Amino acid sequence: MLDVRDVHVHLAERLVLAGVQFQIEAGEFVGLIGPNGAGKTTLLKTILGLVTPDLGQVLVDNRPIRRGNPAIGYVPQKVHLDPDTPLRGRDFVALGLDGVRWGVPLPRRSRRERVERALGSVQALTYADAPVGRLSGGELQRLQIAQALVGEPRLLLVDEPLSNLDIRNAHEVVRLLHELARSRGMAILLVAHDLNPLLSALDKVVYLARGRSMAGRTDEVMTSESLSRLYGYPVEVMRTRGRIVVVGGPDMHLVPPEAADHAGLGEWEATTP
Amino acid sequence: MHMMGVLDTLHLWLLPSGLLTTLYMWHAYVCGTIVALTATLVGYFVVLRGVAFMAHSLPKIGFAGVAGATVLQVPPLVGLLTFNLLGGLVMSTLSRRGRRDVVTALTLVLALGAGELFLTLGQAYGETAYALLFGQIVGISGPQVGQTLAVGLVTTGLWMILYRPLLFVTVARDQALARGVRERLLDNLFAILVGLVCVMTVPVVGALLGFSLLIGPVATASLVTRRGVHTLLLAGALGLAAIWLALLLAYDSGWPVGFFATTIIVLEYKVVYIGRWVKTRRALAI
Image (tube, rainbow over all chains, first blue to last red; front, top):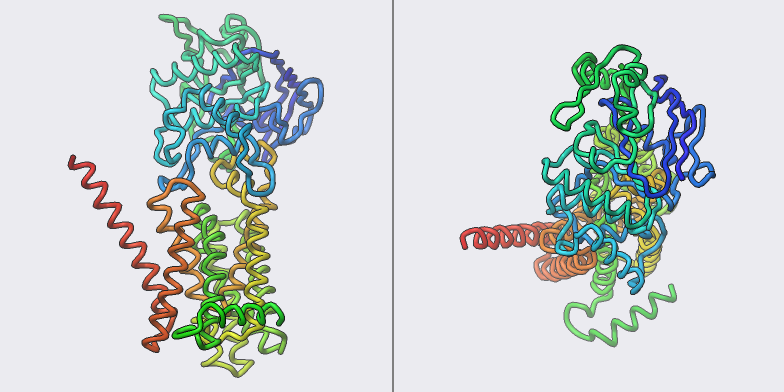
C-alpha cells in the first residue's frame, strides 16, 4: 500500500535522502531503523507530503501522496504542553478526527463514539477526562496514538515512540501497536534508532544509513555484509543474547555528534556519515 | 445610529435610576461588556499560544496608528485598522524567519517611534496621547458604541471560523501539519484576530487596559478549569466582573477606570492562584 521509489531529498543544499526504496503491504509492522541523522524524520515528512522529493516518488495505494491524506496517520515525537492547558484528553483526541475543518465543532453522538473507541483501543479511557498537560509521557503518547487512530488510517507512521520510555513501557507500546496492526489490518512504520525492543514484533526492517536504504526481513538486512554495503565501509553485525548490535556504525562515535548541528537544520535530522 | 437608538431606549426601560441614568455611563457599560467578552475569546488563544508579548505590543502599535490618523486627518478607526492589521501581519511573517520576541519588540519600538512623531506633527500631545493609552471609556459617543459592537461581532465571527484548526495547530502542531492544516494562513489570520480586538479595545479602554483584559481573565480561569468551554465561561465572567466593578468604583471615586480594572484583574488572578496553592497544600498534607 506504501511504495517509496528511489526518493532523493535535498535540504539546505545537503543530500539527506539519496535513493530510498521500499514497499509496505497492508497489516505489516515495519521498523525504520538507522543511526541518528540518517534521515529517518525527513523520510517520514516526505511520506506525509510535508517535504517534496527532488527525485523519485512516494505512492500510497498506487497514487502519488499529497499532504493531509486521511489514509495516513502520524504520531509525532513527544509534544510539549503547558500543565495548565485547558484541554481534556478526549478533546485532544477529537482534534485528530476533524481538527482540520473550519468552525466550532458541534457535539454529535457519532463524533463522541468514535473518540471513545479510539481512547479504548489505546487503553486511555481512565484518564480521558484529565487535563492533557498533567499526564505522564507514556499517557500522553497513548493519546497521540489515539489522535492518529481516530481518523481510521490504513498506514500509521510513528516517530521514535520508544526514545523517552523505560524498557517496560517501551515493550508495552510495541505490543499495543503490534496488536493494532494485526486487528485493523493497518500498516505501521515505526521509527527507532534501536532495533532490539522491536525484534519480536517486526515483519520487516527498513535500515537507513547515508541517505540510502535497505529493506527486507530482519535476518536479511541485519548482516555484516548488507550493512557494510549500505554504509560503504566495513561494519559488523553481532548477535548476542538475543540482541543485535552494529559494531563500527556511526552510533559508535565515528561521526562527531555535532555533525547534525553543523547542517544547521534545526529539528530536521540531516546527516550522513 | 439606528441600533444605538434601540439600545438607548432599552437602557431607559431596564435601568431607570441611579448609576445608569446618565447616557455616557450606559455607553461605558455596553462597550465594556462587548470588549470584555470579545477579549476573552481572543485571549484564550493568546494564552494558549504563549504570545502575550505580541498581544501587549499590538494595542500600542494601534496607538501610533490613531496618532497618524490625526495627522492625516482621516478617521481614527482607519489608522487603527491599518496599523494593527499590518503590525500583526508583519510580526507573524517575520517571526517565521527570526525569533518571535525580537521581531515583536522591533516592530513595537518602530511603531512607538512613529507614534511619537505623529503626536508631535499633529500637535496633540498631552490629551490625545493620554486618551489613547488609557482609554476614554467614560465619554463614548453613540456611534462609537455601534462601531465597537460591529468590530466585536466581526471578531467573534472570525474567532468561530478559526477555532478548530487554530486549536489543533496550537496543541499538536506536527500532527496538524501532517493532516493538512495550513499553518502560515492560520498564523496570519490569528494576527488579524488580535489586531481586530485591539481595534476595539484601544479607543474604549486604551492600549494598556486592553492588554490586561486579553490576558488576565483567561490566565486566571486556566488555573482552575480543564475544559476550553469552562475556561471561556469563567474568564468571561471574571472579565465582566472586573470592568463592571471598575466602572462603578470609578464613577463613585472619580479615579480612573483603568486603574480599578487592572487592579481587580490582577487581584482575581492572585486570589485564585493562592486559593489553588492552599488547596494543593492541604491535599498533600492529608
